[in-house]
Length: 435
Figure 1: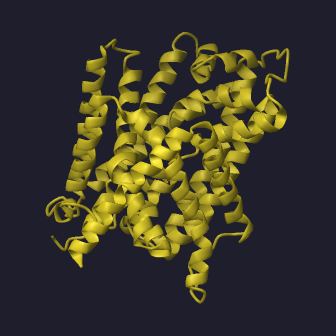
Figure 2 (figure 1 turned 180 degrees about the vertical axis):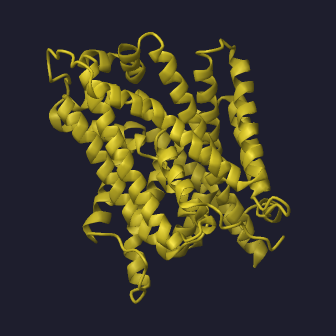
Figure 3 (figure 1 turned 120 degrees about the horizontal axis):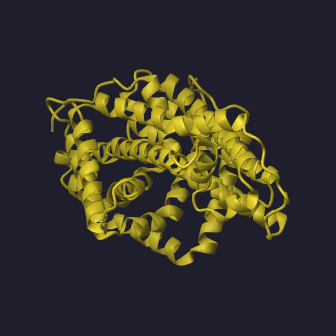
């Protein structure tokens, strides 16, 4: 295996674009009605968005301390291995490499092609071919240079914010619609509010992937805590204000009944071209998320390969001698994603792993307690504020998601655990081979 290592050329701005760009996907355009219905009123809906953001921020601040203390590529896979033992890190890396990241990439490419169908009507197969072509372009850019991937991420993040900012600024001066009824939910307040928070938490997902690239940041111990915390805070503000504008522009019943409330608001404010405007914005948003998932996701099998933890490790972990990028890992992830695109299994696969990934994620948040116990004398550049309250909030949020997921989808949850445990024979076989 080549001794080359990845260049430390990911800037603060590019890292921030990864955080913001991977959190803000299509959820903000599609979720407001679901959250509003569950919450029961505009005030409670905004409170749910903020509460979901606070839980996310608490988790982010806790994991940021671990990222600062262990500034290595691989993200949560690396942290779990260091804090809980190699087997836990391997199991997360296993599901991320084989299913989670490639399935997420596949889902983003299909979403992009589906929205493209708004402009150019296509058959199902044509949409899949467009999805593969878009993936091939993103792959090529990231293989040639990580800097290209960073530029794409930055531009896409700026692009996806344009329709959001436009709706916010125009909405501020828009004449408020007459709301006939502030209370719109039929669920009891407690149950409804909990479901609303759960809905927002999915829309905040994605920020942790920036930690996969810690080894490529110029000053990861200093920059990771900043980009994670500032990025999440920024998104909380955007989500809350965006929803306030929707409530101002559209009748509450229309927000609840619509599958695309943001597009409906754009039509009201900008005329018939509003839907086109928002659809283009969603495509840019999805494009940026796709780039982020492929770029950050490829770092996990790369690190696993360098540690000899995967079949064909030497090939997967190799850094391209000319481009100095994880080319083989990027190609492998893309090939798996293409299989998922063509087979149409990506949604099922991502649903299967929601429960498992949140187990690992909650373990990561709890890891800050293990970190401080394991290295009590260390003086990190960053420590989570309001310790231990902050990580406890993150753990409670993670436990809440796990509880709801296993109640709502017990078969999917258990199947996901089964898929994860299939990695154990691989782990012990490879360990035996190495030793």
